[in-house]
Image (cartoon, rainbow over all chains, first blue to last red; front, side, top):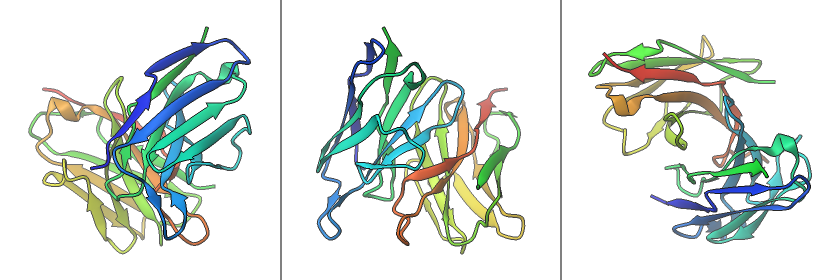
Length: 113
Length: 122
């Protein structure tokens, strides 16, 4: 299995601050053949299903605000919220799809200070 | 816009079989991968398995001996059966669709149902 880890477990920031969430995979999830990283990011608000934010590590899903961005390659990835808004309070998960035993990170909880 | 809706009993007795159905509306179930994912209360996400419209399946090895996912294309539905349920199977169960891009469907989940809580208890 590819194990996904995330850091920090939680963070509390003021409105307008930059939020940075890290995700690490236990092995590289980069395919040389298509030059792509097989990583997605999701946002989950209380009582709701996860919402896809980012795929291919950095491609924003349609309708996702541009304050959300993804970066990284190989085993280390980052989700950045450039200016935290009240509606961004949620748990964020990364997920690898390099292997068809799809696995998720444990989640990072983002709160407003 | 495709929508997914889970249905099934919210309470299952230990050792019995947990059974859920996901109804796909607003689009066809054909030529796509349909998944079950679960989330124990207060915890993270665990992928259970997927089915393709042809009936080809792929399961999480940790659950493989107890899981069956089936599809009924005539009803635009797919289903989950998890046998020998225990309290550890108590979770919100989501059905979800693998998204596609440029003709490939690599494995991110772009559409989710609202989820249904299944409690395993006597």
